[in-house]
Image (cartoon, rainbow, N blue to C red):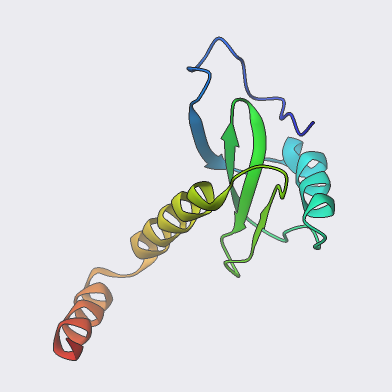
Length: 109
């Protein structure tokens, strides 16, 4: 069981999904998730996806590498994590850089 210490069953509905940044207290749960996924633990900042209070997936905000619980359906959680990580990455880009990227994408279509 990959329970993190920041979840209370009284906080959310039983089927709720919580996306949040990893904290130091999540290190042990992230290590166990990586072991389940037969991968190395994520390095640096990460986003976590919890479902029913259990850590199910995580994404590195630096490399984009994902680890997930192979014993649960996590495809939708990983999609949510990637979308949120992408939004966070866009927020860090300067505005003029974002406009340039959007113009290039529009021309490519």
